Length: 292
Image (cartoon, rainbow, N blue to C red; front, side, top):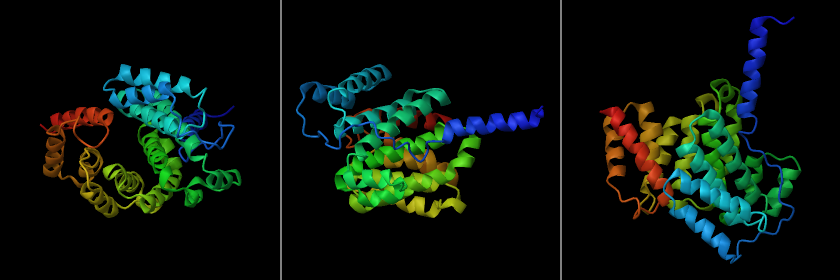
């Protein structure tokens, strides 16, 4: 009979595996055709995507997800629909899910949809089929793939941070290397996408990853500055700096300044997506209250 410590170790490793096995992605093809349907003018798809963009609470987000998921039956290879679904599931996990299990489920769904969008790129798909890691296969991705690349990286970072146990993160930190490689490719392809979202996402890698595995706090600072300096008016980079970077540098004064700036912005007028702005401002309000 196994000893109690041995049984506890087995249980811990099982839980860790549950939380971390897919942090480098799933990459199982579920779309039967490589032909994508980005140019579809299906009114139902247009309406569902529009409702997602305009939503500002959990019920509207869940309704949009349900509607877009049903529409996949008629447009399984629609890249834009897949990317919106990936983003919607990521937002659901980040903003509204409360338990680790709920978050993990949402971020895995987001990964899946982003991956299906990326797998419509024939050269990338063939590299994955041949057994190449997604980070290395990213050399085959192009500028139009950047939206899917960014939301895949966002879901993966959230999965690592909020969807795993501490043991899972310890065992699986190397899975973040694919995130870094994919975002470095995105930075080459379109550094100004979504007003700084690419360097912001790459900064999150350097914050989340231990130094011995490639994380670099100084590089994170530079990337955050690059994100903030990118033309446009996005709430995301300053929110990321306030939430993830300033706590590590203990710069409470700068953190407060970023949070106050975020709350002073008009969520409807900022260039960053409205549905994210609503969450970011709510989260900024929470962080600011904790400083007082």
